[in-house]
Length: 403
Ligand SMILES: C[S@@+](CC[C@H](N)C(=O)[O-])C[C@H]1O[C@@H](n2cnc3c(N)ncnc32)[C@H](O)[C@@H]1O
Image (cartoon, rainbow, N blue to C red; front, side):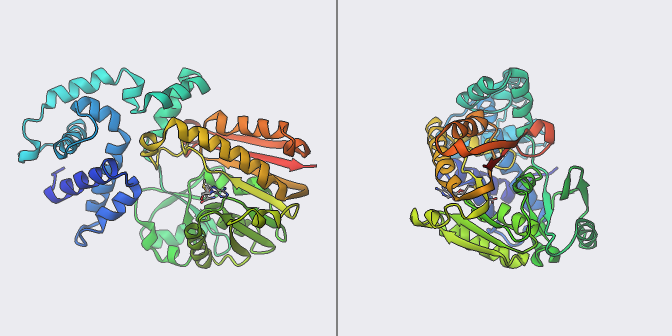
């Protein structure tokens, strides 16, 4: 592989956006890729993947490069040289890369790889949480799996097509994919590619949604005609899935506290042909009160640490702080207390997170069931999804039934 100057400089600029200006990796990649229209898909792939790699391995690479935050511009180039040397990519003789101690980099990599927090590039406090929550062997495997590049998974929109038809149509558009056993509507791409430019996408035949996330909506056991509330709908990944499972019949109310997300959800719903969906902004407690005891099904896809989705959001490792976890636990508890009130008698409540931590998951559900509001609920089914077992994101899903 030959390194191109403008692409490497774009990577360095991207790193600066992420680590200096606090921009999310996904946004930084988006911003950088807009810079040059002449870049082809390979160039774009190089920039995006290199940026994600360096974010993912920040602690390990910083340790190898012997650089510390706040990074200087020269430090970003050093992080990049570590990335290149470890992949055996020959370095050009640019002044920014001169005097790279190639042998020392490899030696330090071997030495640091013996210690998990460096090998898996994780802050001490998250490593300690993992060891406390699981046994060491389990945590080792899970953390390792969470550091692998996420596959691109699609969910067939059954309002428009079926999985085999979608697979064929994508093939005609030059994109090969495979079904995923155990996930009836999922297709995993054989090679990464930009699916958003396909005609199939523009016509709403699929959404990009990790396979683990596709397990959540079916846990609600919805039927056409139900009234379903997606209480933390965001931009609607699960709402759109619910609309499809409801076959566009009944009423699906998508709530969130951010108008921008609901706006995006409406746009996606139009593309998906989901007509039974309405969005409501939670701008006061009245919005929830009006729905007390009115829903057959309620989904609380709660805000969480996101520690189950590090594959696709590696910067979470560096942004998340111990006090964020404390605050999230309080919020999750409150949401369970407040939003469970929307469930009708004999209705169902599903609580889900994209975290693997017990304190955000089974511990929350247990505390809820022991609380006054939880007295009328019982646990029907609980699913822990781990990255090293599933090959996809880490998730937790609990289905509760109201008496
Ligand atoms: C895990 S995300 C939801 C993802 C979404 N369900 C999906 O499938 O794409 C959690 C969502 O909860 C929302 N949220 C945060 N606090 C909330 C609250 N008090 N009430 C309702 N939604 C809230 C956030 O804005 C965010 O969109």
